[in-house]
Length: 426
Image (cartoon, rainbow, N blue to C red):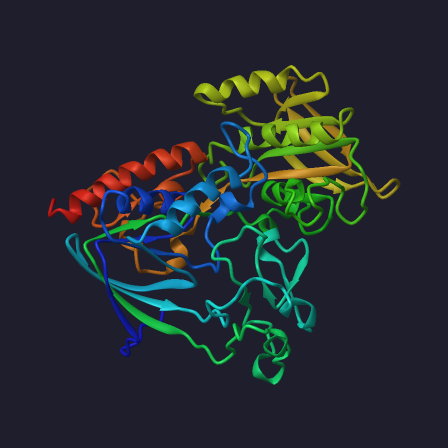
């Protein structure tokens, strides 16, 4: 990360929270509502992290707006929290009680006058891949992730925007909210404590060639499936076979896609089995007669969530197959996708045909994306270490795979530890 000697702005706070997903937001609120000043950083233009991309989440299977909207309202109303988006941490110096953090904030090219009226969008001549929908569809160069995204203002993607040579959006905006001359800003923050809550990325399914991802449009990842299922997704919640606009008769969920594999992710992400069972419910709601097949090595449904596994097993058209999938390929005669897997209970190799295959890819921590800045605090898998007294506090999936409820619980602990540091504890 490039560090600039020129600093555009100097800020001071009690707590710096890096990452504004559900973990970072929850931690910031816990500390701020106790009376401490908090700066909340987010690298993306909008907050909410991976939770905002889900259709539903455990344990109540409610939409993410259920929890995020409440937290965003609390965040918006709390004068102790300053939210800064489009930020990358460039450098960290110091120790608990006295940190100096250098941050590079990218230009949004849209100021606070934006009312999200949308007049700028139709006139924009350039499109971009919609990363919020995992590149399933496209947006214009000026965009907002979804109607409830926060902050409620557009952003311009500088990687595709034609810049001042175009300016069609500037002409269309009656509120003078677009400023194409904005540039990167360098900020220095003095803080007493740091909570690291940068979340996770889905494991790159392009590395799983033997499972057909990238080769066959009928093979998608579990997070792509969430977007297809979501009302604010690319198909407005209608689950179809990509590229065919076809309804589903048979669907396969392939567990441990790249997980528990020394060539990919050595660890288990712990929630993928339950995520696939949850997604099986999405299918059942839209297709009452569809066959659902779940290929697994071992099933994990811990604690209260085991009841959900028991409920799923009672579905007479949901089938569980114990065995690791060896390969996924297409039958050229009828165009259907074939899943080949060994049934380890029978010791036999089976092939089954499907309309759609969903790969349950694991959670890869985002921590290593920050280069060497926090390298000393990470374990071999890239998660923030929690078993020793390190100077930054890990929170959420940055410390290990877990579901939303556990993330929120851990956020309270992170806030308490940060308060201990802020009050001079060692």
